Image (cartoon, rainbow, N blue to C red):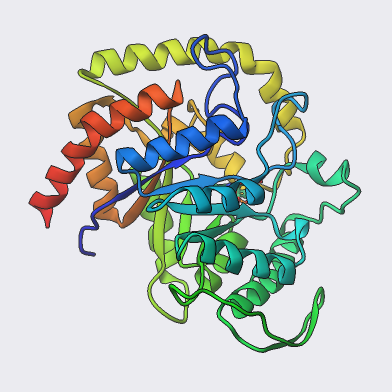
Length: 353
Ligand SMILES: Cc1cc2nc3c(=O)[nH]c(=O)nc-3n(C[C@H](O)[C@H](O)[C@H](O)COP(=O)(O)O)c2cc1C
């Protein structure tokens, strides 16, 4: 596979932190104002993408703020000018026709920079407390399959008639669809076989949780081998970065973060107790203890600026085209990445090209 020149994104701070709730310089802050400034700064620093995750309430502590994904993404679309905006969506929370309409509109507001990230849920209280059925793991994916079929067809401008188990659509077309590209890009997250199959069938990009290169290699090979119509699937990776002038300084910073994380033990336990025990992603996390969400530091982006750049390039050689990054304190570390790691990756990518 040819080397890809990687793109970099940041996780919007929808629940106010990517790491510990107890960092003295980075208290949980999920306000719109913080996220507005964060994404505008990321764009100015050259980050190409932002992921706005979706949770109805804060799954660490429901007394803390939680940013609403679709309202915030629409506002970001109007405020920014270059950065890609990826809004996560859990199919059970929105009817696909309404969602397709919203996606096309946000794509227009953003002049073609909008994308969705299809995620099929793992946190039970979000559904149960809302009076929604938290269906069994593979049943959620079956529902998601009908759901994304409809969203994809409608955002492509198709006049749709669809008779499914969950949805019946009659002679429906929506206008306008994207004036800038065939439709909003479809990302998908989830590691189970059902998630891989769904991604091969419907997604443009499959998001992988942060984990070591050998595991990423295996996952990419599996998904590439699945039957698929259309262009080859592309890959993104979640990762938490700790980069410093030397490996020793980066390891010391990670040790400090891990020491703060001990105070999150109760919150973590509560979250795990409310997790779908069939969710494959938590099995991956159990194998690879890490700091940060969605695999975090398990991707190994901890070390000197040179080391982190080299590891990014190695992942890019495996086929990762988008790195969705987390930091803590987010803004300070994001700036360090832009100043020190990004130019090194650009140099390595030019040499490899
Ligand atoms: C990059 C990335 C982003 C994700 N974002 C969300 C999210 O916003 N909301 C959510 O509930 N789950 C999110 N997930 C979780 C997964 O989509 C999925 O629900 C979980 O992995 C369980 O499914 P699995 O058994 O297929 O792994 C995300 C996963 C990845 C890799």
